[in-house]
Length: 506
Image 1 (cartoon, rainbow, N blue to C red):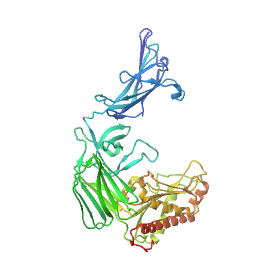
Image 2: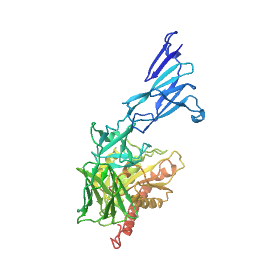
Image 3: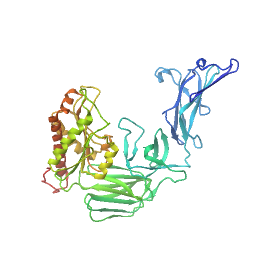
Image 4: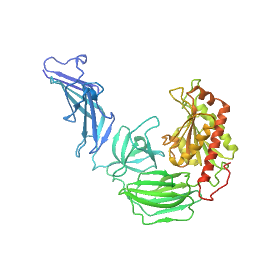
């Protein structure tokens, strides 16, 4: 008596030639789960791997994709469990599947057949029909990969709007981007708009550059025929800005350097791959004060910021970010102290310290208001402060952990975080560390040096007592004030011979 059971998407069908249709309670659960790995909607192209897993009755024959076999793992390979089947299928040219679930089949030794479908849907892409998209919004960005934690995936960098991307895959809510023949990245669905079929994969020859300065910035402008993706990196020793344009090939026959340059020194390029054009922009000072990359039409424009005219607090524009606020409470201590209240209190103390020293202070929030981190970044981009200090309090699952720490993302901005860290430790707080490559939204902008201060651990009773003390809040604010002044002093020491030497940081 051969029985056929089909399982999938909540629909169960059974047929018995002699006994009639059994009830659901009588039906054997031959397949427990059947899913793709990862269990997310995917777009795959030829050469990509489709991975699947089925958990069901041991000792059976499992297949998928119209007969592709799955292998039953040994219990030692499946944490001691029997009936775990896995398989990998490499997508072949000509394979077709358009947003469909994967169908699995399990045949038991007594010839009972069960079928199941994955919850996730799979599409096999046709390389002859490239899928394009353009970035949208003011904070589009690329990720290195599909990794994720509470700070999000590791970010490769921001992109301007309307940058054309060639999509070659998808996993869940992220698309894979083919930047060049040998470089890929990932972009979240919410920051791109898919384009209709028929477009060409974006490429461009570069035109000849212009390099010049005005009263605010030094500029580098490179004409292209499309808004291509790019990435940038500030390097030290020597100080230089490196920008890679993906999909670009050199047709640059000259670089015109006009009057007005103050921060840019030598500028050059190299074709590091047939479809990767690299710009190397040397800076005149060892401490970079930031830069911005965007498009004007199809011309890539890089704005390079100069050091403040006088490296002292008087007249300096300093942004202070009081972390969290409003509905975003942040961490809470055992006595009820809330991060959003503590950060605002310390930020207001720091504001008074800096204004008394003659600085111009920009606050990302001045009250107990809910302010999205993206909105804070956009505000700071518009106002272009000379530097940013973001203030937070830390928390740990262990009440014994305590101390102060500072965070930076870009190595060129590390000196600011180090200066703040040294002064915060001078308050008597133990050091918890200076942390680099920190993937936090307020550390992401490249337009100005920035650092985040995790003042102390609100989860530690001793630290919490200090954090709630107005006198110690003032002490921490003073430490940050001195840290900024020390950073400015170090910038003077790092400048060219005779440049602004002997000026006071106050």
